[in-house]
Length: 176
Image (cartoon, rainbow, N blue to C red; front, side, top):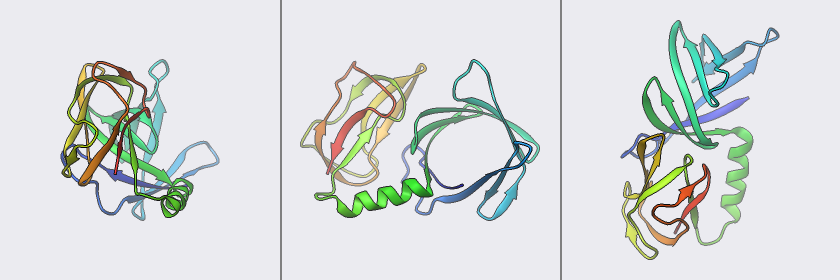
């Protein structure tokens, strides 16, 4: 299966071209991984009792990975460093392209990247914001995570309130 992966570091624009990652299951249950056309030696062990947490060997190096949220927008903590990643399968990309082609008005719903509590709401309906503007701060696992815009837009609706808890993938804002 082919996936398209875009890293979205806090305060930066999403990478223009996603990295193509191809995964295929081998007869013995191992996974063959090709990234950008290059074969990578990978072994993954999901840790029991720690949902979303794995120990991964990549080309002989061991890294710990915890995944939060729901695809395609997920939070990833890799050896203690948090990043936001967009992971789409070919099928998800095709479906998104079909929806985008038929949508009127260009509205976009921003969803919570992980479950948590909204500690600061920094915009209101009607606000015009620039690219990289922080919309809100969500506390999850005792860490504060900023939800930012990717481009200039107008806040059409605010679906959450300060102090409220949100589920991963829950609606936060509608932007236009």
